[in-house]
Image (tube, rainbow, N blue to C red; front, side, top):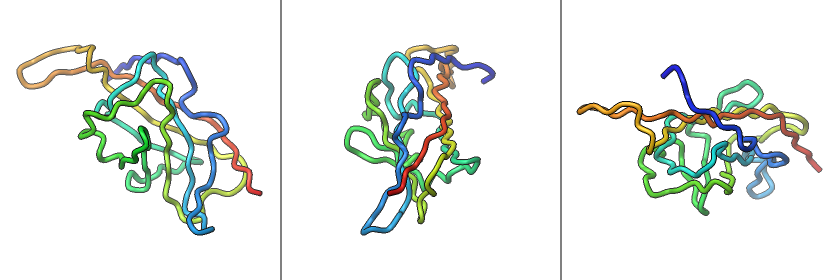
Length: 147
């Protein structure tokens, strides 16, 4: 599709949300929060594309966990999550498994998030219905402070 709807209500990557994660005192990865840049929430099954890039390096899907509603999901589960609703005002918690986490300092966080808007069909055919795509991508430089 050559076009997508884009409505910039909020920054997708949440300020001051980047931090390393620890298990038993050992850095096992990092996490940050994101929000939908739209005027209403969506079901996770409407997410068509989701990629995280940190400092120019694309993170493998199997190393990413997407958390909402006190639950965590793997990116590959999105098509099946027809009853998991991402509320507009609730940030999603993105966890990345990366032994050693991130170094202290600034890091460029890029989120590629494309959804389909299920109430806006563009075409309907006997075989397939196409829906309006929604661009909720975002990028921001966040800082990790290690103490």
